[in-house]
Image (cartoon, helix red, strand yellow):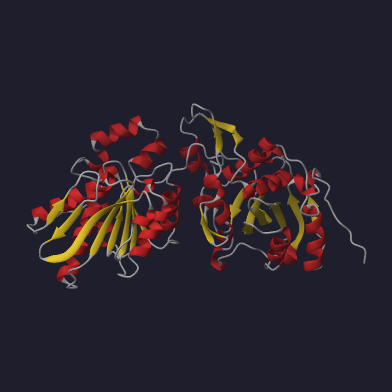
Length: 481
C-alpha cells in the first residue's frame, strides 16, 4: 500500500496520543482504519497477543461506521477470515474465528458508555463533535494496556477543546502529536494534489480562513474574535533569548490589574522598554498572576512573592476598584495597605475611567504594531489599498512565554485554558453578523487589565506619551507610623 506524506507521518509516529486534523474528504476514516489494521497485525505477529479489544467512538453509531467499512475492506483484500456484524442503529463488530481480538463501535452520547474491559486502542471519529470528556475517558480505558488513542476530525465551531489540542500539541507542550491531513493529500480523489482543479476551484470559492481550516486542516481564528491582531507567533517571545527570560531587574515594574470576584482575578507585571531608533516605548508583559476563586489578599501575597515584587512602585486598575464593596474595603485600599505590609514599599495606584472603545483601540494598535509590515499586509490588507498597516513609531506589545497562558492559552491555575485572545467574542446579530464595536463582557479579565494600563500609558490610539504629563492622579494611602 502506497501512502502519501501526511498519511505516512501519522502511522509512523510513536506517540500514544495522536490528533489528525483532516480537511473535508481527506481520508481521515481510512487512516484511522489503517492504524487499527497495522496495530492488530503487529500485536498478533510480533507480540503474540490474540485477545485485544479496539473501539471506534462516534457521536452516534452511524458516525463510527465509515472506519469499520474501511477496516473490513482491508481484511477482505488480505484474505483474513473475520465476521462483520452491521446491525442498524446498533454497535457494529468485527470478530475473528482464529483469535479473540474484537473491534466495536461505541456511541459517545454518554462518556460512561466507554466501559467494559480495557481497550488496546481507540479511535475518536469526527472528534470535534465530541466532548473533551470522551477523550479523557478513552485515555483511561487504554491505560491498563499502555494502548493508544487516535483523535481524528475536521474543525467544528463547537469543538473548542479540539482547537486547543491542536494549538498546544503543535507547540510541543501537549501529551501527544498533531498532524494536518489536507484534503489534497487524498490522491485517490484528487490526483492533482494541491494543484488539482477541484482544490484550486474550492480555494477561489471559499474565504481564505475557511479554506485553510476546512480543506487544509489548519486551525484559524474565529471571525467573531475581538482581538484579531493577537498571534502567538508574533507576540510571545523572550526579551533575552539566551537567558530564556524577559524580566529586567534594572527596570521598574508596573502592575496592570482587573480584580475579579465571580470571574478571574488578573494581574500582569509589565515593563516599558525604550525601543530605540525613534520608536515609541515597547510594553513587555514579563509575568502574570491569573487566578479563579481567589481573594485580593491571596493574589497580593502571590504577587509579593515573585522576583519582580521589589521593583513594583505603581499599579493601574479598573476605576471600579475605588468603589466600596459588600465583601470588604475597595480594592485600591486593600492593595495600597497590603502591599506596604508585604513588601515595605508604597504602591501608587492609577484608577481612571477608560472609555470602552478607546481601551480596545489602543490595545489593538499595540498588538498590530508588533507585526512585521510584510506579514501585516498579507494578513490584514488583502485588497492592498492601504499604503501601510503598522505604525513603526507607535508602541508595541509582547509577552514572555511565562505570562502568555492567560491570553494565548496553556496551563493556567492548574487547568487547561484556551486563553482570552481565543475566547473573547464580539456580539452577533440575530442574522449572525458580527458587531465589532460590541464585545461580550466575558473571557476578558486580562484583556481589560491591558486596556486600562495601555490607555493610561499611551492614551487613545497609542498617541499619548508620558512626557506630556497627561496621566491620572494616583490613588495613594499614606499610613501613619
